[in-house]
Image 1 (cartoon, helix red, strand yellow):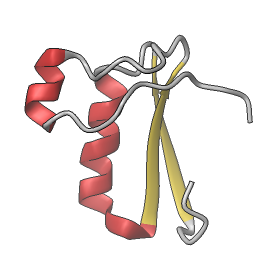
Image 2 (spheres, rainbow, N blue to C red; image 1 turned 180 degrees about the vertical axis):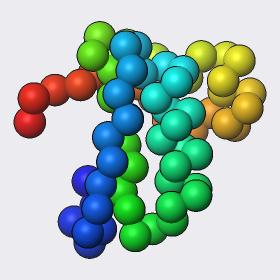
Image 3 (cartoon, rainbow, N blue to C red; image 1 turned 135 degrees about the horizontal axis):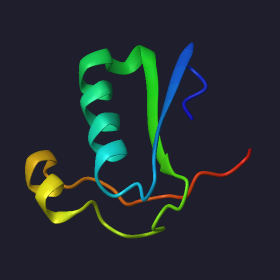
Image 4 (cartoon, rainbow, N blue to C red; image 1 turned 45 degrees about the horizontal axis):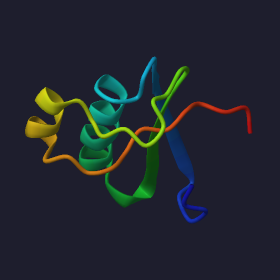
Length: 70
């Protein structure tokens, strides 16, 4: 996470390949650099790209990650 940001948001879904990365990118765009926004999945499909239908809407930027305790 960006240590310079006073606030951070973690958006969580199951796989982190559709809903949470979409919400992450939309929130980051809306909130700007003063808030760090990241996404993860409870059963994240690590390294998988964002699902094709969502990727088309978001111009695919990034990969999935799994939620971890720390």
